[in-house]
Image 1 (spheres, one colour):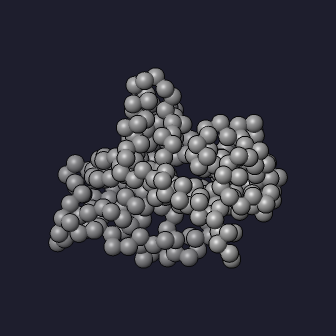
Image 2: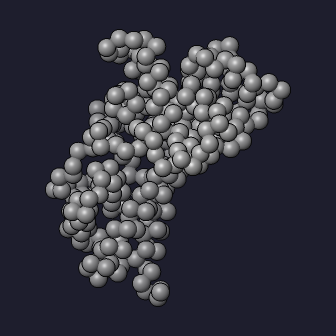
Image 3: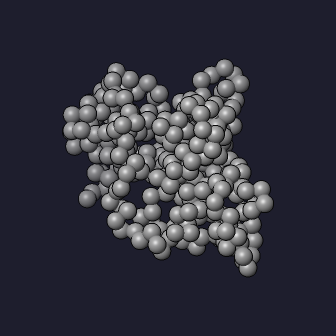
Length: 276
């Protein structure tokens, strides 16, 4: 493929590189916005603060640019940017026609808005609502479950059911981060770089003792996390079990405890995705 044909993608990647803000606190920016009376639920700094977000946004942006190049013949980023509104609108409408999920559509629009620096890009396209009943991830058996022998990973599975940690959090956990006496584990750097103490559900005291016994404080608790393990499903089980420790129809304090334990600023996230 010629250098000329690659220029559009190369320009896009260079722009994404300039948007990276690894190490800069998005949480601090949100707190500042809140103090200034600005809404912070969908707040964006206009930068990319995590490698995961970069990976997702780059994938969506490159797909859009390749579609724009094929459908309109535009081969330079400046040319695409001059028609960003109409192209993004047409692209999302195309996605709706071919059956993209509500989550894919929303992620795509967010990626394009950040990439083009326009928070109102394609606002005229009414995206379908993201409904809980449409979620297919982690609410029942999935294909990856058939590729995993749970007997080989029972200790890890029990630990995740009792703590609700994310994949990266449990992978980074050290023996010294377990506090059996207090019934908590220390997450040094969770989502958004936040440090927190996570309660451990009762019933796994023997497991915690086994994980600590004869090991050095800096040793990783679990040397490997299998790629096929549905960590999100176990995280949801922990959230529901933690909430049921105070069994009432609706317990605001319990919901807030779940949100804090799972590192979510807004309780609505815990309610919508873990407790319902």
